[in-house]
Image 1 (cartoon, rainbow over the protein chains, first blue to last red):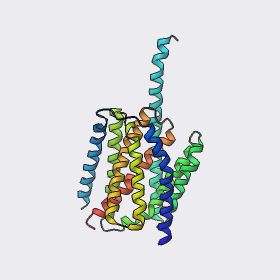
Image 2 (tube, rainbow over the protein chains, first blue to last red):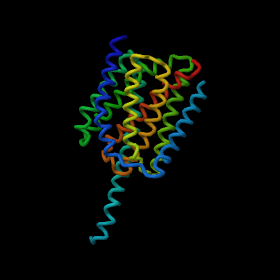
Image 3 (cartoon, each protein chain N blue to C red):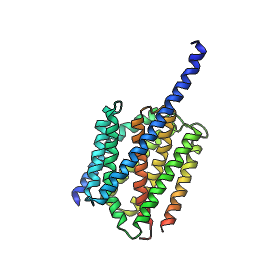
Image 4 (cartoon, rainbow over the protein chains, first blue to last red):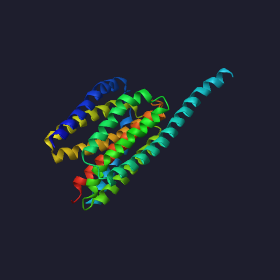
Length: 60
Length: 222
C-alpha cells in the first residue's frame, strides 16, 4: 500500500533528522582511539560475523 | 576521616555506583524483554494487521523522544520504559505471524531468537570482563547508523532484495558495536541512568533480532 510506504518514509526521515545533530556532537565528544583499541573491538565483531554465517548455514 | 580515606573513597564510590547501574540495568532489561515477549506473543495470537508494526514503532519512538527524557529521573520513567518495550513487542506480532506461516518459519524464528541471545550475551560478557573503554567507537557508530537509515529510506521505494540484505547485515554489525559501546559507557560512568541504559541495550537487541530474522528469512532455502 502506497500510504504505508509514505508513512514509513516520514518516520525514517524524522529519525535521520534527529540523528544528524547527535552524530555531529558525538564526533566532537568522542575520544581518539589509542593503539590496540580497534583490534579489541574488531575481534568480537568478526566472531559475530562468523556466528551469523553459521546460523545462515544452519537454516539453509 | 583523613585525606587518604577521602582519596580512596572516591574511586570506590564511582565503582560502586557503576556496579549499581549495571545491576539495575540488567535486571530491568530482563523484565522488559519478558514483557516485550509477552506482548509479541499476544499480538501474534490476535493476528494483528500489518500496520500494527508501524503504529507501535511510531508510538514507541514518540515516547522515547518526547516522554522518556522528561521522566528518566523519576519513578514514572520505569512505566514509560515498559510502555516503550511493550509497544515494540506488540508491533512484532504481524512480522512474527508472517515468518511463522512460512514452511521453515518456526525454525527461522527460533534460530533468530537464540542467535540474538548468544550475540548479546557474548558481547556483553566480553565488555564486562575485559572492562575495555569502547567510547572511541561512538562517532563511527552514529555515522554508520545515519548511513544505514538513509539506505533504509531509499529501499522503501527501490525495494531491492540485495540492498535489504546488505542493510540487515550492516545493522547486525552496527548493533553489535553498540552493545560494546553502551556496555562500556555503563561500566565507565558515561551512562549513569539505568532507565536510559536499559532502553539503549533493548534497542540493540531488538534491532539485531529483527534484522537477523530478515537475513535468515531471505537466505533460507525458501
